[in-house]
Length: 313
Length: 277
Image 1 (cartoon, rainbow over the protein chains, first blue to last red):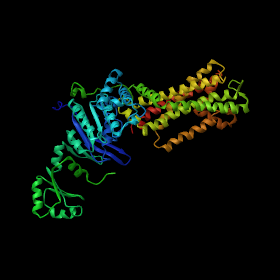
Image 2: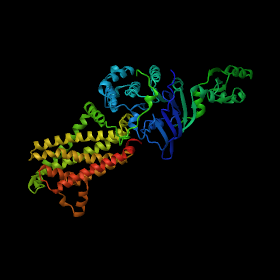
Image 3: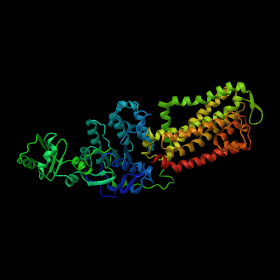
Image 4: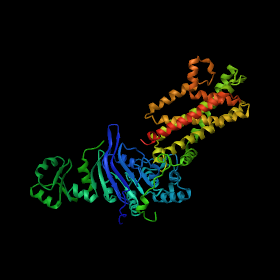
């Protein structure tokens, strides 16, 4: 799919900030998203991803900085901007007082769409979400995965130009994840701009043309998945296990192998351009790991390097 | 989507309409949603709201009324105690319903049911949501008022067709309280703060000349009560119930028209604080 001809960015944020009292949820981030791009916001919990999403939707007021969506400021033109936005919030906020199909129809009415359009569209989306036989069920009788699928279906009711997905596949089983990825690919092919936050690095690698890693409200890195791996990690990673007690002690003997060494409680990671060569060096030093594995560097390595391994909240 | 989007599709035209940031002229979608939700799930709560003033009327009007006997009505003639308090109870019920819908109900839907969060991610603006919710509250109030007036008629407390004007008048009263209530809710952050609403409402209900005339109070307290909205509501409906209009009727009505105007202004100014935190 060739990218759309270069136009003005669809989303443009300059020094965007949101403070709650002393807490800086978003602390001066800048990025631009061209039309038709699939753009990811990655970061640990509390990094400011959801707050950024809410500001893009114009439902949270920024403290400072500039933000335009399709050329308009969402604070001054919220209804017009949101008319072309589809939103999948992190937590499902379905209308529990309405039945499944009515959730889609009523949501479509909020956009001012006519029933003649909404009725076939709702049926099509129920089909997509595999909820056709649940059409007249109550929302609270749905499983977690079904609710998620309904929320995603609901976000498409207005055929959005920009789709905001805040951890869309959290709580979905692998089948449903792959169906959703396929659907998102097809939306992207039709020119829809995707803005995505996720905790799943494989999802980010699959879906995002470009992404930013956010931590503590600031952007730590920006680029395509491949670029980020190139810049912030090595081509390959050698994983060695010496048994829980020995991993840290043996690390001293491994110094100098590969470009970077990271001892963890359960294994030692050696970041190297050539993992097999690094493994030969290890064995030539007389060290015998219980298991060894050479794999390609992933986005997860980049993520953990940039945001640290300690638990957030 | 059949034809792929182009760069032109992504260029939006800015609306020049006033309040375009807050209002998309689609409050009817919020109203339609409320009606559908009522039909499918919470009609029982609505029925219970109708009985409260009726129970007061039966216990106080009929029960206590047997002890009290006849009292002096708004235009000087004697009326039964039940006929005296019935319009006041209608005013109280209009106030309670409107305040509940515009404070607790809004607070809950905002912070717990997350209903408004879903709505506000669509083309709806906060003013659409506010107008829709206030309209629903008034519609409910009008239904209660109609039911209560019918009960009054059955109990023989209605002597003039003019008394039917109590129904639109109680909608005006409810509008005054609802428009103000939503503005006040925008200042609330916790359930404890919401309790203050009840703390104000209960004494207002008991002491606004609901069950006895204002003249029992010393002058200073009379002035204080006369400054409060419920007293004007009680007096307005009491006058309508026996078609005893005086220049004060205009004052009572005007009080609520001003209250509606100020309340809507406050609510509109506070919409961002209420919905877009």
